[in-house]
Amino acid sequence: MRISGLLVLAGVTASILALGGCAGSDAPGAGPAASPGQFPRPAAAGEVLAQATVLQRDGEEPQLCLGAVAQSLPPQCGGPPILGWDWATVDQSETQSGVTWGSYAITGTWDAAAFTVTQPPIPLSLYDPLAQIDPRLDEANPGPSTESTLLRLQDELNAAEYSPATASDWSAMPILSNWTQNGYLWVSVIYDDGSIQRFFDDQWGAGVIAVQSALKDAD
Image (cartoon, rainbow, N blue to C red; front, side):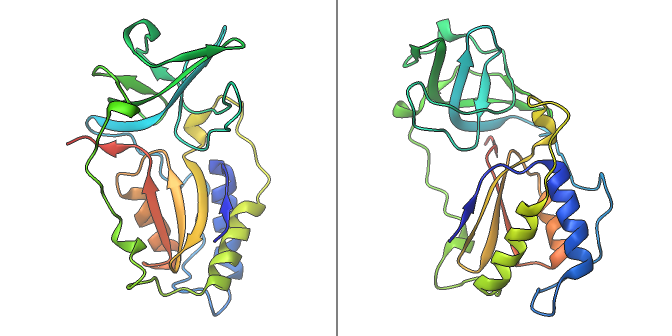
């Protein structure tokens, strides 16, 4: 299994264009090339739940770190802005070297650019969610693709060298990471209402890309 970090929207679009034109016979379900701007950036219709680190550097707005967090002291991470956040109202935060952070379960809304808090956050150490196991992780029922095919697709995704207009333009960064596991190329995104999964299914056929959403629809 090979894990890759943050991808930007432009990179995904460019790599899909490339794949649509050069996918070999071992690429299951290879479909037509995508056109720029086609990659979905869905907003959530209702409340969503984040289980993540909130981090704020002195002089900057707080960020919701939905991807990888570097285990330094203080930690290092980035993510979309989190609106309505107040450190005075939450427990179990830490501050060091001009950085304040903590890990929480947070209910809010997602407009495809920013997360807005709607309910009091709960420290993750006190949060006990029900386990939700993705059936695509069941080793008894793997995906149809070979590891070599998935690694080639992953390389195509990671090969594009694009950057968003600004480093803080998180609305242009819906993809957090990708990795191969159990016959799928997994793609972790900020939020998927199903449209991102359908987009990849249309490109390469169902059962190739497994999309995971960091923000979950609240019950």
